[in-house]
Image (cartoon, rainbow, N blue to C red):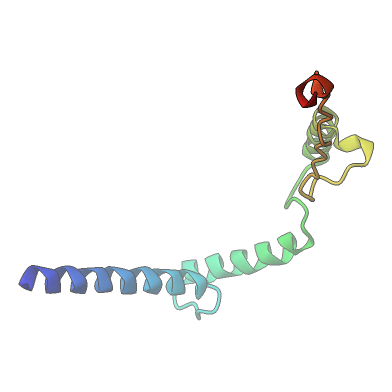
Length: 110
């Protein structure tokens, strides 16, 4: 009986620690910096979120951008996305009904 209570308490404690960690990680940007290193870290995080908000690569050189575009083009050619197909939709399958050829159907009924 006591072991069941201990196990229940330990699982509740473990869940509360997990939620506390997630909340602490998400609140890193909202915290006020007390340490100069922490302040610098928060500034870099805010700067990175501003730069990455456009959906593009951050701090990319023209060579890396060209390489990225070439790889995407090769993948599109390999999987047929360059033909204008929309790969964000689930494919539709068309299975035609098979035609059954009645073999000797006239002889069975006679």
